Length: 176
Image 1 (tube, rainbow, N blue to C red):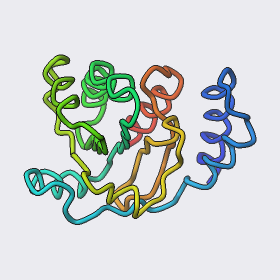
Image 2: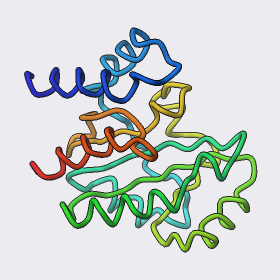
Image 3: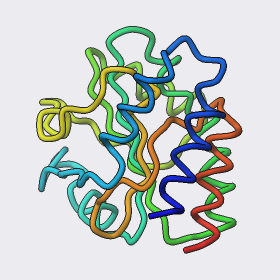
């Protein structure tokens, strides 16, 4: 419990000290999600269901929800994620990265995958099933979660472009 409170305090102080989100709102969102169980649909995209089932059963999961109703490339940041995946796998290879995309136009996502030479699976959630099951925060900064084997939230926050947040993720990966 002490570690969780310590991580929460560090996360709030570092990750949001320069952001436009009010600190109290950030604290509330993080407190609300820490320890919460994320529910996964059994099937998300029939073309990738076998991969999906393997990945959601991994001991550790880094789930990022990408709702690309505005700038798809801005939200995806696949090049940066590729670097983070390589970095994380050098620390702990027992982590699954779950990229769940709900978009108006999935062809843009496919183009971004090719452009960035991103070979990691991206799951298309055409019906926004995972969003309906979990009611994620609207702010994209709070739509990335590190989950344990029981799908309980360990960390909340998007580490792409936030070195302090990524350091927190790596600290936890080293412990496991």
